[in-house]
Length: 309
Picture 1 (spheres, rainbow, N blue to C red):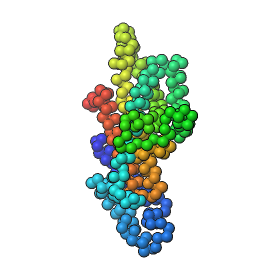
Picture 2: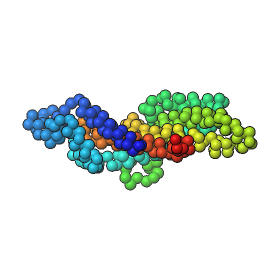
Picture 3: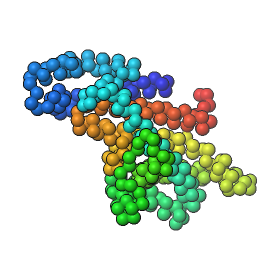
Picture 4: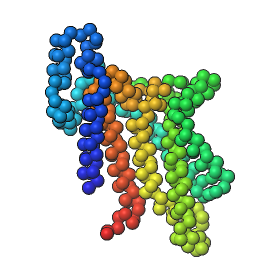
């Protein structure tokens, strides 16, 4: 059932993606050939690109090519879209998982600390810090960190350039500032969710029973309370990873990071329709797969969801 729902979601996403590229202003053939192109050249280009066919036919043909892995050719460079995307996708995944390795454990730890010190100064401090982190725009945080660590202290590069053959040390230097910005943005939601979920569980009757039995508090939290909040935590972590893959356009642009989000922005600016469509569908696919993974992990973590009805 989940697989069918995922396929239906991707189908709807493909329709929306194709429709969105159809309503982009301007003429694709004109954008490729320039403003001085002759009518004959424009007509030939539209014929080559299939722009003279009805939209539904072009959609069916495009979807069929996507299903067999043919992403088409870039109208800006003439190169295969798959070639252009390969390195950019790898760079985005590096940034996303580097951020997740830092943000998720830190957010869970802070949420756990806030929940075990509910309504204390520690809890209020963590909650306020999380609210500030989620309220401040990403570009402002990025510019602030660049000014502090790149311009004033000159500790870190202001532009993150990832190249093949770089040493691990050089790569880490390039990633520190983008990862720091994304960590501040994404961990706030996880902190608040973990804190609120744990506070609710810790006030449950079975936790009070465990306390009356004399079970140590650390054991109660780790082995009784925490497993009962894994389901929502898995969901928020999956959404966080999906955002890190598909929603890092601003951070990639500010730091000139060669990722997939920045590639899509450049494709929109150049009206490179095949590249826009391929990037958009990759983002949708990642989002759907991560949500399916979160559903499966939530079911495995919660015995009540596995119980037959």
